[in-house]
View: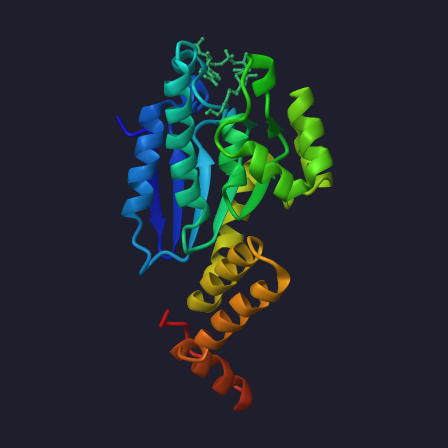
Length: 258
Ligand code: HXC
C-alpha cells in the first residue's frame, strides 16, 4: 500500500501523503515510506519538491493518535526520533521544498509543513499544534521550528493554547507565504515550483544552504558561509552562461545544472 506517492513532472516532484481515510495521519509506516521516497528522489533531475496531502480535507491531521495512545516513554521517544530524522532529511534536502497545505495541518501535519522551505495554503487550510490537549508536547520539531518561523511569543501562544488557526491568520503571522482558493492551490504551487526550477539550480541550492546553515551560526560565521557558496557559483557553467549573455545583451541558454 503506497502511503506516500511521488509524481515527477519534468523538474518538479509532487509528493503526496496518501492516507485519506485517516486524514493522512502519520503512523510509523507512513513516516518510513516518506523516508524511502525522499531517499529515492533523483536530485540530478528534480529542482523543486511540492509536498501535499491526498483528498479534499486534510494536508496531514497529525501523527496517528490511535497508534500513539499506548506508547511507553521509550517508544514515545523513539517515535519522535523517527519523525524528527525524516523531517530533518526533508528540511535539508538540497532542493527547495514547498508545502501545498490543502486542509487540516495539525500536530505532525503542521510540523511537516514547517520542515518545508515555503508554505502555500488553500483558503480551507487549518493549522495548529493541538498536542497539549492530548497530554503531549509537539514531537516532530514543532517546538523548535515554529518559534524560528513566527517568533517565540506567537509560537508559545499557539502551542500553549493548542488553538487552531485558519489560513488568513496563518498568513498574517507569516506561517504561510500565500493563500489561494482551494481549487487553485496546486496550480499556484506548481507555478512557483516551475519559476524556481527556471533559475540556475546550483545557485538556488546554494541559497537554501546559505540561509539554513547561516541561521545556525553567528553573523560573522554566517557571512563566511555565504562567501564560500557565492564563490562556488563561479565554477558553474550556468553562471558563465547567464552573465555572458547579460554582457552580450542576449537571453541566456537554458540552465544545465552544472
Ligand atoms: C489518527 C485520525 C487523526 C489522527 C483524523 N483521524 N485525525 N486518526 N490520528 N491524528 C481519523 C479519524 O479517527 C477518523 O477515522 C477519520 O480520520 C476522519 O476524521 P474525523 O475526526 O471523523 O473528521 P472530522 O470530524 O471532520 O474532524 C477532523 C479533525 C479531527 C478536526 C481534523 O479528525 C481531529 O481533531 N483529528 C486529530 C487532530 C490532532 O489532534 N492532531 C495532532 C495529533 S498529535 P474513522 O476511522 O473514525 O473514520 C501529533 C503529535 C506529533 O500530531 C508528534 C508525534 C511525535
